[in-house]
Length: 178
Image (tube, rainbow, N blue to C red):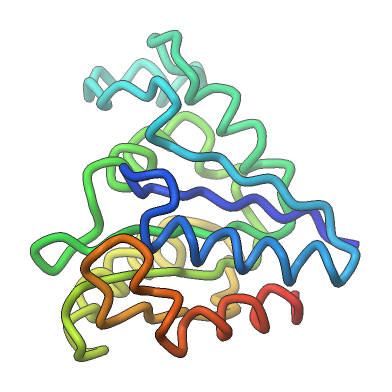
């Protein structure tokens, strides 16, 4: 059994990337894993101030929900980073979360990572820049991060459209294989 943490950056509950998170969670739970999803839009996560205090204290001076999320990230075996893609990149909620990992990013080690991206564009290549940003964080900044899977939720603009794409079942099957 693995401890799976899903970080959903969708600003819309039941938005397309959030639905893919729920499908991934269904599959992962069915396989006997402990699964928790954090819907970032309902959390209070301030922007990084770039003050540098955390470089020596390993604690952020800001008191918001990020401290608890970081604890969950450190304890997780598997982390799912899910974002809608706006203007060819991850959304602000996901980028803010990544920026705020600085106090403890060295503790987010030896994790399996799955990436879920959704976009209205129908071409998978339109998600390349977002994928490279995820890889920059996991491969270049974290120790022993393993990319375990990618779910490309393309061709979904309006809420619910993702359910009629191949990504809908792929998210379930990928979660089940965790």
